[in-house]
Length: 476
Image (cartoon, rainbow, N blue to C red; front, side, top):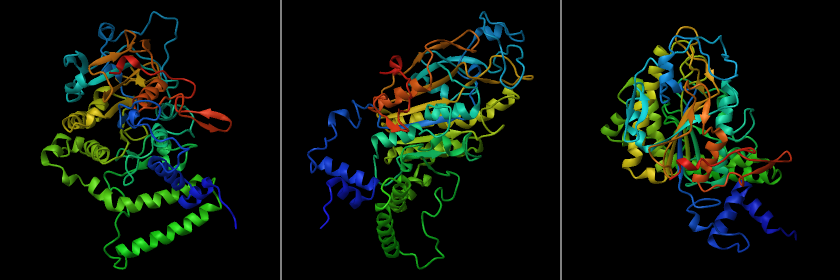
């Protein structure tokens, strides 16, 4: 008779990742005394008390122009139309063109809220929410090329092949529910962003931790979730029998290949799909929302309908146990995004309008439902734009400074950290990189970013590489 170790038994009984899940369940029940139980005082955190249970990230693809949105610079008004000659030894260069003259924002800046945050007229709705936000006014990048910069802001590296933040959160913290994906991505209806699916992949982590992409504009958003009415032979009993047989075959196959995480991910995806057949249709059904809620998110306006629908879906998914949702604004390519090279005056207002009302509605809705107490909202982009012109009224890429903001659980409201120089060209104080933003998000979720690592090709890899400091001034 062949004997099995407990590890082998759990692995074979559960089939890879399923075995790990079974081990966790047994540990929580106290049936495996040598495996420590989760510590209740950590409130769901891995290394310390978690203040955040779930995250929604609004990613503005293409490079939001900070001097035309949140970074008010009187020096640009004074020097408008003049050559840019900063008091530094650094040579002024454009990324894709010759630098033009300084250009003030064509949009009026006003102070808003008790905190007095400067915001331009392109964000009238977001401006009403500034007292809930903590602004990072000096976010730098290490590249001014879209693809590498987008990788950096999403994975911590400028090269492909590394896990995204959502994948790390899924790997480190696991699921809040067994009925919906842990990490969901809602891309712009006009197309995937730069790097396509690379921004939300699992890299060298098990494939099961990659983002699940939902087409919010599709009908249904998830294809093949329910059987076609034409196929009368598909019944609930037939589905159940087929899934049981498929699971048995898959696990027998996986036993012979225990190191292949793709098999584990495939098995887990089938099991999750079966559960989603019961739970996802309700979660994705926006008709369940009141007319007032739909209007608040802008679903009755063509300009805001797409982003509004995805923000509302994000709230519904978070409400039902999804841990991390990314909502993207802008497709990859030279247009339909925030990459305003040609004409800021014509290009920025439409894309800004598409996200303005839905973003403000999401914040207000989360607050009204009591969800901001354990939900973090992150607004970010891959880099900023230059203070001088490209062509007549466009702005080129700028890795030197950009702006992000946080709102919700664990965040000090109405504050700002860091500042750019007088022209919004480079950071002047409080410079942060993606590493610091990622470290802060992980910290709020109860994770020490220096301890969440995986040995890969002989190197202990982590989301923040060898960098990163928690941005304490913005934490409550």
